[in-house]
Image 1 (cartoon, rainbow, N blue to C red):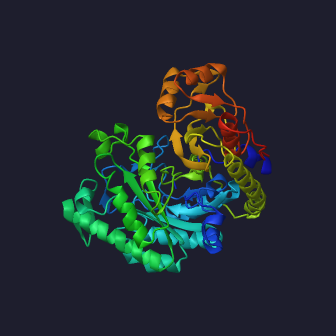
Image 2: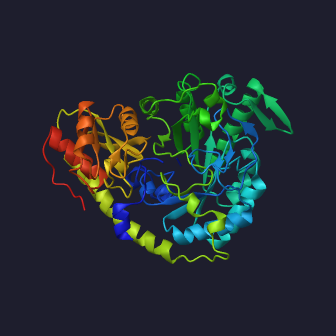
Image 3: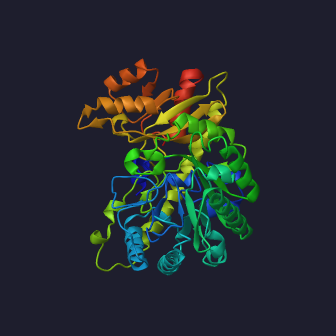
Length: 474
């Protein structure tokens, strides 16, 4: 189990703060340390699971199309199977027995978890009896949220995500065609006003009950991108723990209004620029995967197709042994990883007059540089300077290498996606792609294969711009 952590795990860097135990109170760290969406550090080690028990929704978003049986699409609102609470409990137990990293059960639709509250509540209550140590987490558009905050608190649901894309009803009207509230459908600015007021009320009520709130905001260029600075200020004032600014997914094939009308999504550098502008506000989540409503596994991977109902045993019973063993191993590995981060920070402090750079890392998880360049389906991107190494996001790409042959179109897409990146670190890279990257101004190196990410980046940076550090890499 320890060996698998060193070589695999998180295929990404969704659904947290990059802060660690030194950046918050021990009590708060205890609440987020095993939640892969609320702690960037935790996502290296722990998995989440969404059960699609809440298909009904009370609003329409111009970026959403809730699609069923779409195994190849990875975005919110998409599922392969809609479950009733009986099926959901069976599936959670089966996954917990096979995925020892599992720490969180979430309900994120495919509609709205609060609007479909009866199914959400029954599922959580029954799972809690079977696996009481699982963290419970729900996502909601917030319209029905205030009606259920007391029940959420009574059920010990400690983490709630609200999608808030605007605080100005005029802007919101460009995002939401209608909402269904108080037994009628509302449209236009009035619909937006009702939704936004209910969202902020729900946020206040949750914070008053000491429930951690993550706010999701979809960045839509030309509509709410500049306005999200004001959203960040507002949710910070209301007490949100995290703010997750994520890019609009706008592919016409998905059938959304924005996709069909040509509304573009932001570039990775546009997302980073906006995140940098609000960095002093609410803590930012930069590692979101914008998960499916039936996602299973570490952030960045989806094992949901391994656990469809037709593949589950006829009867299941929970065995906690593997999860308990895994947690004991993780406790040790985390200590080693933390030590390398501190060593990297100290070594970088010795570098003088060096530029701030973006470095992309090919990783299959576990916090290591452990993936072949040609096998990467995304890169984790870090900012490095004499001040340290900071995770800033991920960039999805099409896999370049298939059976020893590189795809030209995929390589061109990788170059475009790595805009702003100066260097790629990976476990292995062939001379041909390495030379091609060099020609477009991107260096590539496999000299730090299987190092901890922060240690490898620091060692590369110090070799380029300062002294060669003696890094702790194993």
